[in-house]
Amino acid sequence: MPSFEEARGIILAHVKPLGEETVPLMDAFGRLVSRDIIAPWDLPLYDNSAMDGFAVHAADCTSAPTRLNITGFLPAGGDVAAMVEPGCAVRIMTGAPIPPGCNAVVPIEEAEVDGDHVVISHKVLPRQHVRVRGGDVGAGAPVLAEGTGIRPAEVGMLAAMGQALVPVYRKARIAILSTGDELIELGERPVSGKVINSNALSLAAAVREAGAEPVLVGIARDNVESHREKMLQALCCDALITSAGVSAGDRDLVREVAAGLGAEELFWKIGMKPGGPTAFSTWQGKPIFSLPGNPVSTMVTFELLVKPALLKMMGHRKVVPPFVKGILAEDAHKKPGKLHFIRVTVKKRHGRHVAYCAGEQHTAILSTMTRCDALAALPCDATFIPAGSEVDLALLREVDLVSECEAAVGYLH
Ligand SMILES: Nc1nc2c(c(=O)[nH]1)N[C@H]1C(S)=C(S)[C@@H](COP(=O)(O)OP(=O)(O)OC[C@H]3O[C@@H](n4cnc5c(N)ncnc54)[C@H](O)[C@@H]3O)O[C@H]1N2
Ligand code: MOO
Image (cartoon, rainbow, N blue to C red; front, side):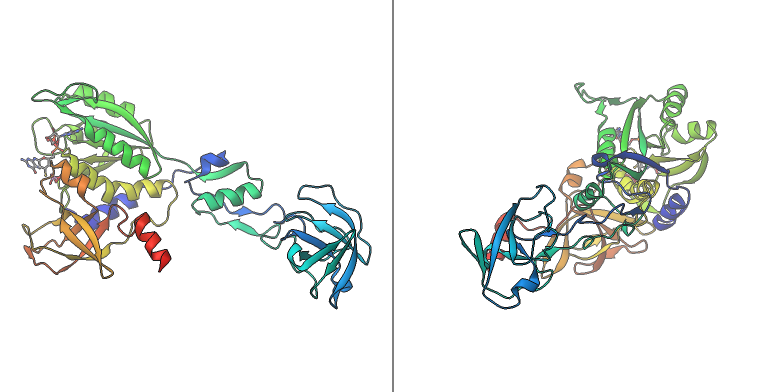
């Protein structure tokens, strides 16, 4: 039976990037560029003013004050200007092209208008307040390297470079299949013996959070034919995640049916809890993640084992977030032999992450999952981990953000 890290290693060794596609710029937001993006032109494309003021020739203003004749007005977006003769200045707005003959800008605050003349009160240096052509990015220079994530800043840069269409790593389409006769769909009224198929939706949300596209294929009932039909349908996608039907029960059919379809099983069962009965196989190169059905086990195995694989499929290089060191606030007990991940809330105290038990730890207890900030890893061989021990934390949400009020107080001090 592989350890948690071995299982994750096996999974990552069996998935590879899906390839690339070209999408409109706004659809590229949140994705990764799949090729180096090279600047097709200079940014800015022309020398332009960084200030509202007067475009001048610096050589006219080597001593102060200087009186110049105002011969024109240049707003941003205005027509290309005529040559400005020595001894003359042009009223210019921020962003407007520097007119021929000029090489500097004097801000309005350092100039005094006197009819059709302007008096410059300071000495002027060549290029002052001029944003020079190519000063941001030169034509032919790399703008974004392959693999870069596209955030709002990258969207802005790509737009400035005229990239209406962007080559990105393909978004993985991930089929989600629940199994079990007890399941009913959201919208149906639960009665004794029936359970709402919540795993499909928590998985769909997690898949979307990872940047992939969930494809809900419904529920396979507890017979081979239903499993076969649904699994074949699901395997049109790039990967399949199943939940439940993977443990030791008489009706746990997922592995048997996957094998019948020709899937190669890489492992079944992992030395971790939750998630002990997880299986992983591939079918025609497509990964099948068979997650245990207890709702918390489904989410924890997704987070720790499936998410890194989906990220790798979508071109990410850094797919495993490093654990954060934390301090256990309370004693913890466990059976030896497996790496346990317990659900904890996390508080920052004197710069350290302090972890408190988030509640009842059984893997059917969904409410503890909604309260938890992190999963704390309790080592395989340990049976008693005293309060104050250092533990590894897999953070599930940001605990460092400060509230608006705290931020305001910080700003005032
Ligand atoms: N004899 C053994 N029994 C069990 C073992 C074992 O090793 N030997 N392992 C236990 C562990 S650990 C887990 S986890 C579960 C996993 O079992 P399955 O993956 O086969 O899942 P099921 O038994 O079908 O369901 C477990 C539980 O989860 C509920 N469930 C299932 N699907 C959904 C869904 N889509 N949405 C919400 N809830 C769901 C289901 O009703 C069950 O209550 O096995 C233990 N047993
Ligand atoms: O692993 Mo089960 O996944 O412990 O509840």
